[in-house]
Length: 322
Image (tube, rainbow, N blue to C red; front, side, top):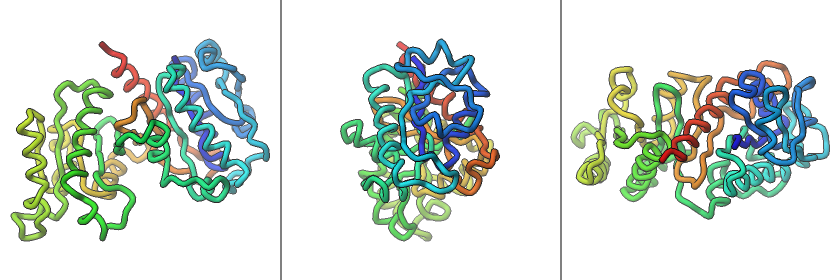
């Protein structure tokens, strides 16, 4: 089976990075692109396939495409509301393929939530929530990963002022539990090592700089340790991400968005991958947006898309292992 790739926003760099990823990988890691062939960069060798099973045989010579007619041409940098319904349907098609075993994993190109809401009334904050909905409402968390670091934020796209009230013992427990299960199932780590950051500077410094660590973070961590989990924390976030510290854990659970994303984007800005943990199928995505400002100019970097495809392939193999 091949990997399914949803097209993302046609006016962004999604079609460009998909075409460049195919040129770099070709038959070595075949995937099928779900979208309108007219939106691919001019000159992209592509072939329409009726079924993902055909993709492996043609991927060495051309990009296999499950073709959909999106109607109007795509204008780089200018999302068209007429495309919104088709973008959403491409994601749903990808989920259907992996759910029924016609594809081994799903890799999603970036979408523009405002364009989908305007054009099709998209009611979800983003890809992650929509995928969880399509999967039956399962509990999921977001991981950002590169070769040298995996981070999981317990709270994501909320104002910093709301983090202390949103971060509850139950939320932290669920985040750690989903992360641990995914490290075993999707990354082949039978005894994963997890580091948990504190919320406050110096992890609260014994209550002098905040009491959340004393109030519940330490207790949640200790509960997992009592169950045999290799887990440490709460740790001062400012000393968790240098090379020697990263060597001591397989994933870091952080308390809020920037605490997790700043270190990984500093370490590997181009090669980071967004992974949804907790789904019944493998889903990855390049860790960048639609980049309307450079769309259509030949400047898009496919490094993250290639990394997302390779990680999806590796995760699918881990799930399939006996």
